[in-house]
Length: 85
Image 1 (cartoon, one colour):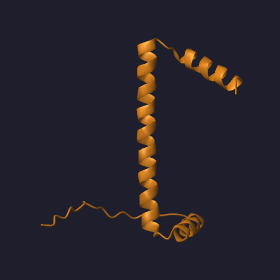
Image 2: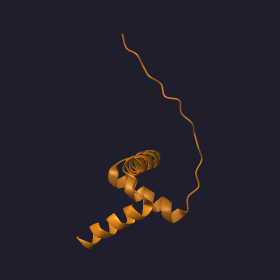
Image 3: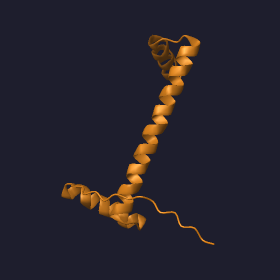
Image 4: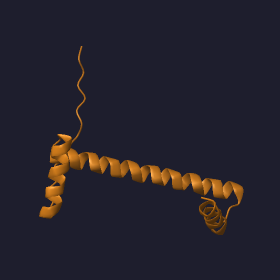
């Protein structure tokens, strides 16, 4: 028996300036994908990146709270790290 999973979809209309569309077309053609696929993939990457950043932020917040770090402590550690590079 074969089961099919159907994903709910929504159609949206977007407006881009012509230069951006040319750049999108160049990238899409180079990658052998459609504009729609390029935009879909780009939005998914953006959302995933934002989610990872939020998780990292929350992790940092919990570390700071559990170790009594202040904002000043974090800036000082970054400064030391950059000086030692």
